[in-house]
Image 1 (cartoon, helix red, strand yellow):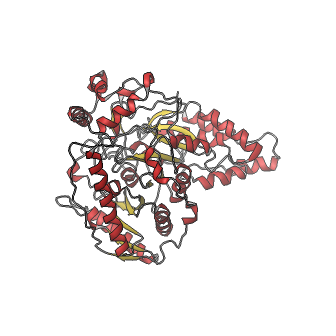
Image 2 (cartoon, one colour):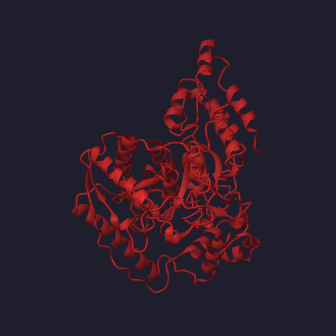
Image 3 (cartoon, one colour):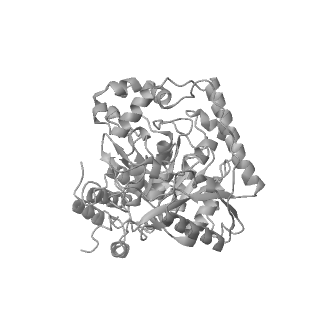
Length: 532
């Protein structure tokens, strides 16, 4: 049940700690209210240590913003379900804080979690009516990790149905999510609900998933930081799959520092995701050590024109202008920019048949969920009444997947050929970077501004994320680099690195962020009470 925003604001006002505290301390807390707009983890924790903020007050403030802006006002339509126990969980954390201080690095961090993450007690439906009512009894590995670090899952966010679309966030459960920077435009897909919610300050941080674009594209469209890790560094266990060949789960935040804090918590080996065996024995860096304002000094950055200059796909002039300024800023901050880097990519040799694919992966996933899942295969999905409510693009893609032959398993010749191609692709990227002594390669995350709602087109989309990182399995990170269309529509810059080079990308992105400070909150969701 949603609470009236004025009632929640009243809760915020009265929920600062009082009992057992000196009057002067209470008066100081009351005279310096904490503002959640553009809040950071460090800022929240500093306020809690100063006894000017409780977890209850923080959670209540975010609930008030969701209540005011998600279904009313700008009606972003970013939130599928709010955690009904969030305030109770906040109270428990407040009690633990009074006994022993912060409970972990993400103590009372209200997180917005994409609807394809299994979350105990909350519907986890992959954006589809076919899975509506599926409430897991187990958390996805990343959800378990952030909870163990002290975070609260505040809400589940809208997504493109089955994570099919990188272009828009629309599905049969909730409909369409709007971009808070321009309410007539898309937030991209498929993690657009997480992106819109975090950008609009509905929570402190977010979790998304990325098969080809879906952390980085929505982050770019919403002036956020997003990290897609090296394949095998973060677990996908408990995240409903689109394609296990390229699926990644990771953070979406307003700052590089916050993305780093979440990333530190979620990385590591998980027996339930065999791919993370690649991390076995590999030391996990202390990623916060990479947060250096001088991190671009003497760095060599290559401009990867291949990623954004492609046949029959124009680059918007506004974006070229913003990217040119970004390159100038990199140079001014101490980096050496190497223009027109070229990667000699390998030819794909297709094995007999197809390796895995959506039908294979969703069937495998659903078969393991037993009677708690309302359907158990793609065939059952397509036979369910939910299909009548699928958006046209979703229905078309689901029908194509259902009609296609079932992909072959990981030990097949098809999958061995696919793995060989991805290895060769990664080797080509590594060779180019080694030959040119590059720390990273950069390109605009998208070549076009966010498209109008209901008028998305692959030909004019400008998604630059689908190829280099997902195929190589190497990490990529997007960071705000400015705005187009009279300084109104966000655009991000992507940094691509070698395998396991997340610390380097964080260092470069942080130094760029601190030199430019492009991130700003959207005007459509102002501080509550502003102008009154």
